[in-house]
Length: 227
Image 1 (cartoon, rainbow, N blue to C red):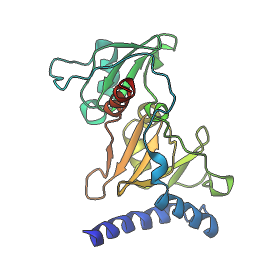
Image 2: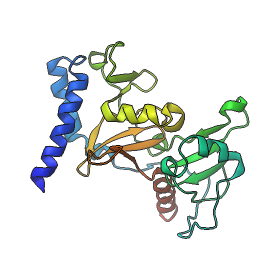
Image 3: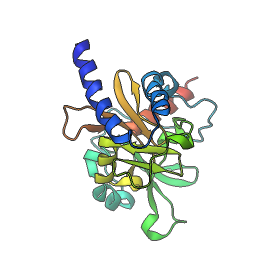
């Protein structure tokens, strides 16, 4: 079992190395790799002192829930049940906005935006305080790299299978931008984005799966409300 896991992680790390060797000096890369291997404890999910202005009660029986009409077009356009999961709440009002939670996202209706951008995906990754410090300038990829992409707004990159999945399944409209570099979490290669958490499992097709971040956020709220 241990040997299999080591071989699996080794395969990805070598592929990941291939993607970034053209952009990271050897000393910087060594520090970067150490960060991947030893950074998981910093990703403990919590809300700290974040104030929650509403309560949520998630029923274990979601058979009566449906995708609300305001979100149906976005839901169908950006992957439906495979990308967003089943609805787990009806319409709720959060900070003055109409929202609906799904297993893998929170959809929000913003009437103040232009019509094409009135439905957005909530930045639950940021709300769950998963954002990490940006990469140092010495580690940024060249603009000509086809294997890795730097997002200046958040200071992080996507590479390899993570980038391929991102591009093929809705990009920043669906997932937001990366807010961490890849790291090991409970033995699995993981990367956080503003609206999602990616898991890498090489024997799957596609090799990227999504955390049930909508459910995670509601459960976290419920735990905090009980304190």
